[in-house]
Image 1 (cartoon, rainbow, N blue to C red):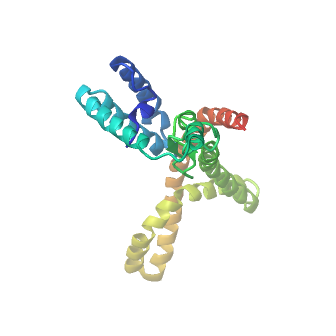
Image 2: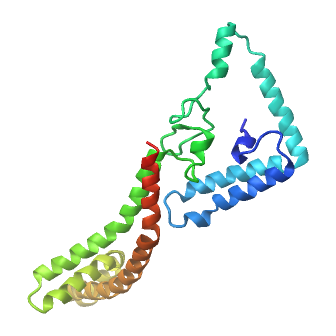
Image 3: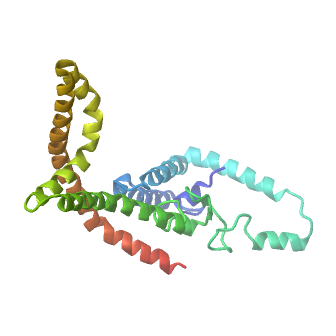
Length: 255
């Protein structure tokens, strides 16, 4: 049975107002808009579903009453289990059944969505998502890599053109290859139909004409797509890069 009190971060004797206040704060904290274009967005959405389910039960007096009855019955069944000795009983209460991977003295309430490491209530809410520090570090780095790599590939295509070009033409050849990089998907998707119709109409000459058309229009489309995408990527690096860097420093400080 899911412990809805732990999900909302309240105690069993919390009032209706306290439960409502905790629910509203968690909804703001896990709202998907805060994770736009973040590869961990789905984790926030999953957590928000749990929060809504918990409040649906605890926020309704009748449902909360029935939940309390089922919860007490489960706790009473646990207490009825035979105990071997007083020493064993003392050890059970001193040591959590499933300890947190980072805080051994705390009981785990959730598992990392990536590696399933047990997390206590503190660790589960530490980064606004249910993930251990190692997995969060890895996925934030992969997110930054997804932003950096298009810039790197664009620069490589441009410099190859500069090297292959001759004099004043080198700059324009670099722009052309960069445009081909961003327009490659358009060329690939339209290649079959373009070459088919040009070849059917003009034979071998049409085949070469189709290739030239693809390279020219693909380049023009790539220029506009590249400018648009590079603007968005640069904006994200400026706005989100420092936040992720601060998060990296904070994760490192945890040991």
